[in-house]
Image (cartoon, rainbow, N blue to C red):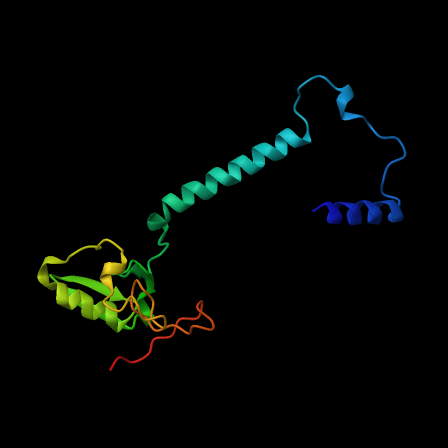
Length: 151
């Protein structure tokens, strides 16, 4: 950050944009409505609007195309979910066949989100498998998950 500041100062100095007379900020002792105050109020209002929109996204249709996997809690796009189940008139979407199989094994008592933990996966020790949901992952590039057919 210091280097960037020096570069910006150099660019301003070369282009002649640094004023000849500088106002010393320490000379003003009064608190007033200056440009910084107005910019702070604008930033605060944008922050409050973003917070309000995030807490009211369902009202505006936000997240309508997504669901949470009830086993691992992963966000799943409903249109491309690898597995779905319907139970008691409620539709569930899953990130992998493994989570769907785990859901089937839990039986009829499961109707909501289970606690997300490593206990939800029976193959925690396999380094090529996600410890939460059981999806196959590429160990060289863990951010790129791959759904592999289960045998």
